[in-house]
Image 1 (cartoon, rainbow, N blue to C red):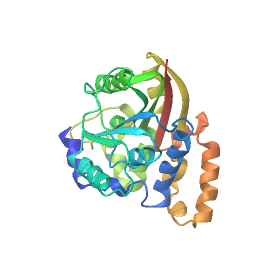
Image 2: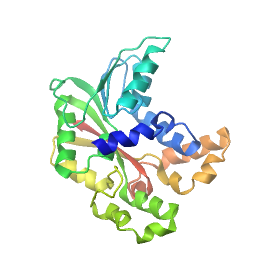
Image 3: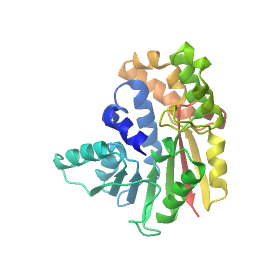
Image 4: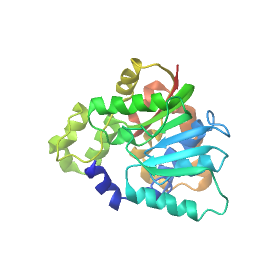
Length: 260
């Protein structure tokens, strides 16, 4: 995990989802679908909360939220924001590893957001353990929301960013789920891979979403849009992002399921 904490020491996670139109698509899409299932007074566990984009949003809506992150920098940012809020919210912030939720009782949360851990946990057994922990603390009929980075879109992004990447073994490792010390701290998934992982568990799929769609391949155009143009693009995106045939082109995916 040292590789992950080092990464977030220099990365500007606080501004990631709002720095331009392309990144706004991911945030706006996530909020659009979460608002369909998260109601006031829900108890929410946000694992890998980053700097709290979703934790603060849902705490401000009257929910009780516990935000966990492995990065001390992200934790400090969240605590500082919480101290400076004018309106008090029910938000608790802790340093924690998503693979071990022993501080939390079985069947105690209405919603579990696992929207960071599967970006980084490379070992297959550890990924499964993380998901099982999420389900353990989730109430029956509670909703588990999992974010993942799509391996095919990530591969295209790497190739498009630098012509020389076509010659690099670590780039092709993305497609084979192979990870070496040379690779970055991210791990990549595909929609069916995640579905298959959850198939053996006591869950019912609700929806699988292409969170940012094709935006990463046309970011220059999307970032040039006026607010009115952006809303038109977002409308198109929201009308198409749940079509299975389009899941593979999205850089980020959002999988929502219910605990049986």
